[in-house]
Structure formats: C-alpha cells, structure tokens
Length: 221
Image 1 (cartoon, rainbow, N blue to C red):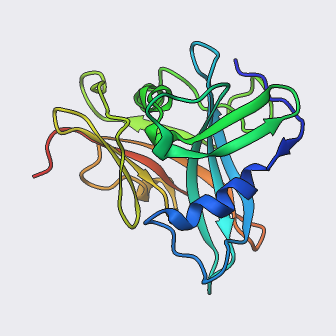
Image 2 (image 1 turned 30 degrees about the vertical axis):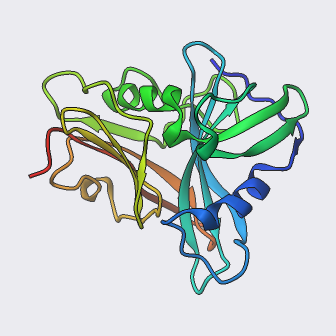
C-alpha cells in the first residue's frame, strides 16, 4: 500500500492546477485565474510501488457558479518518457524530493489500473490516510468477460471529459466536469457497462455524488 506523507509541497497541487486547468478544453471557469479548493477524491496503489496515483476533485468558484472537476494526477520521481505534453508541473516534496506531476489520463500506470478498479480487482484508497479503503467510491461491471486491456494513454479531450480508447472499440470515459446525481440508481448511462462513482464536498458544505468514470464495451453504434 502507498504511504501518505503529510508534508510540504512547493508549489502545491492547487497552485499547479491553477495554471494548468485553463489550458483544458473541458474547463469553463471565469475570465481570471481559477479559484480552487480541494473537494475530494481517492487514490490507487501502483503494484510496483513507484508511481503515486490520485483522483483529485477540485471546485472552482471563479465563474458565475461553482464547478467541480475530476483531475487524475500521477506523481513520479523522474520524468515519464514521451509525456512532456501531459506534464502538469513539478513540485518539491518535503520527504521524496522533486516530483513530476502528470495528467493521469496520459500515464500508462494509471490507465492500466482503471479497468482493475472497475472490475473490483483493486480497491480505491483513502486520499489522506495510508492503507485505508475509501468506502464512498463505488464501482460496477456488467460484462460477462474481463474488461478488455490495451487502453491507450493517448487520451482525447472534449468539452466534458476525456476518452481512453482500446483497439476493439471499448472506451473508458473520465467525466472531468462533475454532475451531482440524486442517487446511485441514476448513475449509469444506458450505453455503459461499468462505472466508478464517488463523492465530493460542495461549497454549501454538503456532499454530492456523481460519475467519475464510465466504461463502454464494443464499438459505438
């Protein structure tokens, strides 16, 4: 299990995201810089113990209404070859030293763990406490065979999210702009065969739930 270090980061994750979010096609904040607050998320463990993986939810209040975004990040102790386009920034970690933070949708370690999470072969971990499952994260898989592998880390962004394709037409979709839903029964779109959902804090102090990831198996009709 990954060890969570409670230490300093310079710059902080929110400072990195303040500069990076406005460059994304799915960002729709105000005219100035984002005004970000950490709102929730969870972690996954790297089987090799080398790469940190965090599904961070941030809420931006710079626009006319608050918007919450899912920002999967990976943290590495050295640059990821060929992923310069996906670099969010570098940080100085008080324990681990320099860390390279990447958009996790372009990191093959995170992309490989997402199908395992959807199938239930790995478990979401608490964002802030070591060796502690996050019970607010739910998942499902309706397929009769294992989730296909081979999802590309060459992610495609649009105005709502990020799609990770596989050669057989299967796709993982990360919902970057988070939408609260009334209950879990309303989570799964008709075309989806699997999902990951979670909770986050909204500015009025209450908790919201919504889709983080959906799986679509087979080619789109």
